[in-house]
Image (cartoon, rainbow, N blue to C red):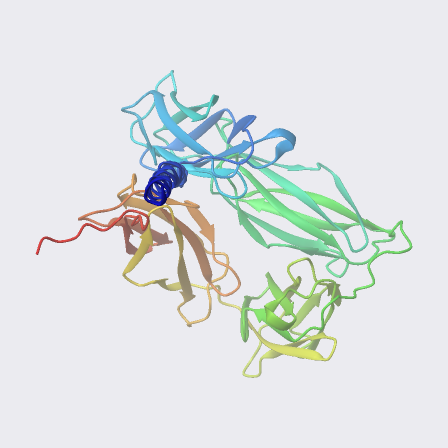
Amino acid sequence: MQWLTGKYSFYLAILILVNSIIIVKPLGTIAQDTAGTGTTACKPKSIVTHPQQTLVIEKGKNANVTVKVTCKGKEPATGATVSAAILKGGKKIAISPPSAVTDESGNVIFTVSGNKKTDEEPAEVQFTAGDLRAKLAISVQAEPCVLGSIEISPEQVLILEQGKSGTVTVKTKCGNNSPAVDVKVDARIQEGGDKIALSSTALLTDEGGNAVFTITGNSLTKKNPAKIQFAAEGLNATLNVKVAEIAMSDASTGTTVCKPKAIVTNPGQKLLIEKGKDVNVTVKVTCKGNEPAVGVTVEAAVMKGKKKIEISPASAVTDENGKVVFTVSGNKKTDEELSEIQFIASDLQVKLEVRVQTVPCVLGSINISPEQVLILEQGKSGTVTVKTKCRNESPAVDVKVDARIQEGGDKIALSSTALLSDEGGNAVFIVTGNSPTKKNPAKIQFVAEDLKTTLNVKVKAVIDETKPKEEKPR
């Protein structure tokens, strides 16, 4: 009897062990199979493209299309697989990658290449996410876009509360009424520079031909409104901006929950500006652990060369990123002694030298970082910084940098086909590795005016750590 009890106990243990293997193994397999397959936590309800209906592209050029997938309540559908297929005009255009997974904002970027001119019937691309579909017509034109119009929204006046911000959309179109893509739009405050501030002095239009500027109302305009002029390739439009009193009595007082520990400017030490032009300076205030210092009042004062330069506003409050933007105007040429601005936040201060020159910047060099090769994991992204300098070695500000994938368009994707260099002369592009490059790397060419440089990009396959390693025969 004791022998039988021991025997049954042995078989019972074996049975439990086998059942656990049968149960655990499939669960492990399921977890492994669903990883990275483009599944999302919420059910996708809509899919839209930007631009929405038609993309106009010049023959031999590339343009980006942003596809956005959302769930109920416009919640971003993160991790959804979006496929792209050419329905019409397969010989006229190319699109890459064939599929990609949406990011945390529910967006994914595809690059369309215009290979041949489309005739009366445009090419057509279909984007699919689950059972959702969106179609986009592609018109490839042989002639480059000639800017035909520039419009602003709102059309006549923007009304802001003091301390609040609003947006102005500049809409550009070619002569054939199609959106003018990657057109440089300059913005200049003509009147009331001490009343308002601009987020940027120049922007490039997106795939829809739009450039969106953010304007902040620093102080009341009272009788006369402030004025901003927007200009693109000889065309311009002017907007009036009125800054009204804050309606609520408990408006922000410029206090922050953390103690500011550091203050820095961009550019870092020296700003070069052409006489008669305006340039933005971004001041960032941070607390311990590089946490943004939100709601901190930053004051700006010209310490040297008050007749040479001006700065506006006199003070402003940092945003949710701990940043505030000031506009510096170059009035007169500085000689040997440079002008100087001091920025103060609480007991922190930082100084910035300003050189005003009469000769405009002539682009002298273009460099990239990394210099030769960018190595990415499949499905991951990395950044490439394009550094531009004038011939006098100062940063080249607001220079248009074009980016074009020369080889391996199905292996990698670019966040933008063109960017403007910032106050430090830098333009930062995001590159995503879609599939392994194997033998030959992908190539990206960056062009600024008549200078160019090329970067190799290698994409490595993702190693599945869950798979058991095969033992080599002894």
